[in-house]
Amino acid sequence: MTQEFINNTYYKLFVFSFVFGLLLYGTIGFDGMDELCALGLVAFFCYTISQMNDWPMNKAFLTTLGVFLFYFSYSFYIGSNVKKAILSDFIIQLKPYVAFFLVYQLRPVFSKNQKAILRIICVVFLLIMVLLGLLSFAKERIIFDTMYHVSYYYACALGISLVYFFCGENTTKDKVIFILMLSVGLFSTRSKFYGIYLLSIALILFAPYIKNFRFNFKTIFVGLAVIAGVVIVGWQKIDLYFALSGEAEEVETGLLARLMLYLTSVDVFVDYFPFGSGFASFASYSSGVYYSDLYAKYGIEKIYGMNSSDYSYIADTYYPCLAQFGIAGVLLFISFFVYLIRKSHQIFRQSDETKYLIITTIIICYILIESIADATFTGHRGFFIMTLLGLVFSEQKQKLETLSIHESGNLDHNSDDEPSPSA
Image 1 (cartoon, helix red, strand yellow):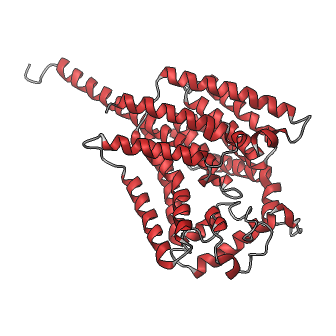
Image 2 (cartoon, one colour; image 1 turned 90 degrees about the vertical axis):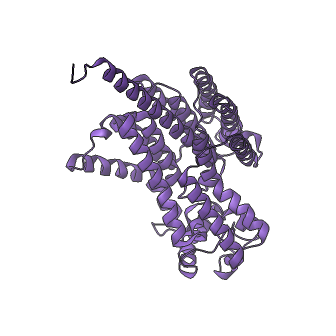
Image 3 (cartoon, helix red, strand yellow; image 1 turned 120 degrees about the horizontal axis):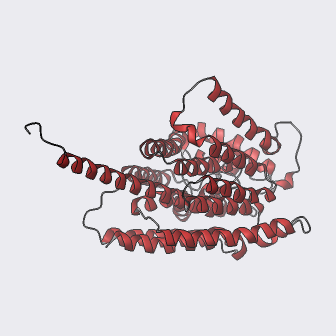
């Protein structure tokens, strides 16, 4: 099996996931589309490794898989929920990690023609989104009616702009177009997106100076200013989500459910130290479908959106779900993102290519910000964005190897031309 076959086949999978697993996900209304895309990726990966005689596996991927298998066994051992629920949650929680590591392991690289087609797709869908955004001034709920939710809308704007930027040459023109494309997400009027937007602009502006970054008064001031800006634009939502102002919110909004999930998760962390309450036990989709006993145990089963007949707000955020994995799981979650940041920065130091570092940082920030009040990481948006991240790492790796071979060839060539000491 050639790398060209892998590149071309994965390209088709990527386009399918991009169009149907992200851009049209809310419009189609098929909730299992991301699972279908994940199944296609896993099947292709399994077929690929079956055709390879010797293909070393990524150690970080094997470690992650080992951790999840441990928690899978642990969940069965403590009886965190019924078997079907544990298996369901195991698949859902593992999905974003599989998305990243399998793509990174496959090492696909797209050709110029393939990237050109992707950019055309981006422009076509962006124009549709601009039209929807403009029409929203006349018909307020048009985005909800066509894309299900505004969070899907700005996720599409982010996905389109990142894919377009990834397929470009990292020129000043590409960076300007990236910001303009990302600006379409402002039609969503969501504070979380404002934070992502501000961070993206800051990264574009300061990325050229990252290689010479030094901790001093100026850099600390700029960093704090950016963080302050993100908090300011998102303060209304932060206050709303966590009731910091002390004002009572309407129960029907689901804000009480989110607040109680955060508060109760602390008790779960303590009571199930250090490995947590196990899969499908708390704040996850499967813990609602196969209603977990923990909600009654902690007295929150009667809260709006958190009961056995209506569990619509049980998986409305991600961080409380980490209580299923305990303190050990939280440390592993943090370690994964530290791994991504360190790996990306390491490659950047070797290649001096800011585009990849910008995309990686934006994706990580998007996931971490979204996880405050959404289960994006384990949903369809998380799946696609992690496949894109795997693609980014794959192309970086390929360029580094090409550069290494080129430099090695130059050294060999130079050594042949130089006269020997004895001459």
